[in-house]
Each structure stands twice: as structure tokens, then as C-alpha cells.
Length: 243
Image 1 (cartoon, one colour):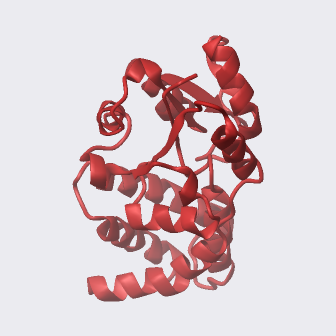
Image 2 (cartoon, one colour):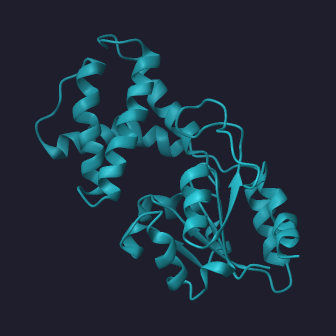
Image 3 (cartoon, one colour):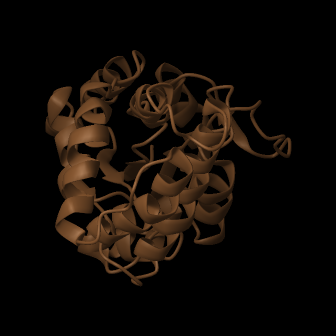
């Protein structure tokens, strides 16, 4: 059995995509002055989220500033004026988007059964969350669904000083474990599985049947990739891998 199992959070434990679509969907449907159709607005939001989140992860701006940069590009297409001050941008984001987004968080139904099974295993692995998200927001998600108690640590770029994939080595040191004795489970084939393997961990792909970013079909994986379709398959998979 592995010494430590890292879990990705968004798309693995909590349905981030569903919450985003619910929040931004309400906004674009109530935008009479938008310059493009609602589906194009949704696509633009995803593009801007990915672009400016990468800037945050690269240390080029704060978590709040990446929200503001997103809005400065999005609001003109939405047909709304762009507030001059950071405070007004923050207020727009909190009132128009964040409230619905947080209300729409959902934990996948296979999460708690998986964690309960791992918790009961004799000499089972230690569990931690390894996520590129904001620490306060990510802990709030876990607390909402009673999941914090299962994890020894919640590790983010704030604690580790780097995002995945660079963070894998640092996270192993933080957990006092060898990468060779560590498993990383996540829904993103490249960043959660292939990058983890390059860092010396065992990557396990949670293939939920949908591409996290595009909403299209899952990417095609090499047959050597360790793959599960439900987190409830993970305990047996870990036992077989160990054997």
C-alpha cells in the first residue's frame, strides 16, 4: 500500500465545472446587451479563467487580481461597463458570481464512500489534498461536505510556494514521504497523472467521462495509464497496484 495518497480537488472531489456553469449561466442569460450569444460568453469565461489562473499560479498576480483581470475582459462582451476601482470589481465578482458559484458546489457521490473505505484499511495510506486553488476557498469546499477530517493536510501553492506540477516534489517533502511511495489521484490526465509520474509518483487518472475544461469527451490515454472511472474503485486499485 502507498504511504501517501494525494487527491486533486476540483473535478475530483468537488464538481467545479458544474458550479461554474450554474453561476455564469445565470449571468449570461440575464445579459440583454451582450455582444455575443450566451454559449460564446460561457466559452469566453472558461478561456479567461484558465488564462488568468495561470498568471496567479505563476506568481504574476494575487488571487483577487486574477478575478479582476477576468472581469476587465469579460464585462465589455457582456455589455456592461468596467468599474474603475479594484473594489468595485471585487464587489461585482462577489455579488454577481461568487454567491451563486459557492451555493452550487457539489461533492461527487463517490467521494465519501472512497475516503471511508481508505480510512478503515489497516495500515492504510495517509491522505492529503494537493490543489492549485486558493487555500481559503478550497478548505471551505472540503468543510462544506465534511471532508476535512479525512485529510492530514490540504496543500496549495500558498503553502508549497509552487503549483503543480512543480509542487509534487515539495508536497512529498512536506508529507515526509518518498515520491516512489506516493500516489496522486486526479481528473486531469496531463497535470494530475503524467506530470505526477514525471516527478516520481504514481499517477492514477480519475476519468469521469468529460474533459474538465472543454466539457467534451475525455482525452485518449495511453494503455499504460492507470485509470479508474469512480473513486470507489480506488481502494481495490491501490491494493492491486501494491500487489
